[in-house]
Length: 95
Image 1 (cartoon, rainbow, N blue to C red):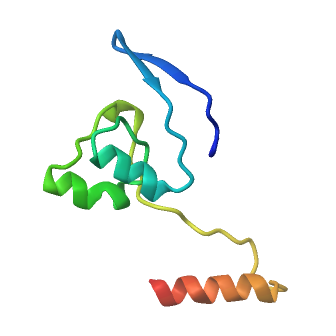
Image 2 (cartoon, helix red, strand yellow; image 1 turned 180 degrees about the horizontal axis):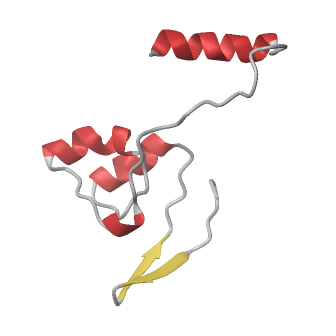
């Protein structure tokens, strides 16, 4: 929880971890991991430049399956809201 001062304890493969690092943004989490402060769960697209440069390495790969991406499903093109049409148009422009 952002802003929490609660101490977190975890056991992974027999090692004990104690952490007291509250962050408010994913970029702060990534920067802390790059600076060697511990593990970070961040989207691969954000971590990829650091992984390629050797500043970060992956761990617990069995628990991080990849997937081809998100898909948009809508049952009918009739009577769609103007808000939905705006989102759909923005996604089409990005692609």
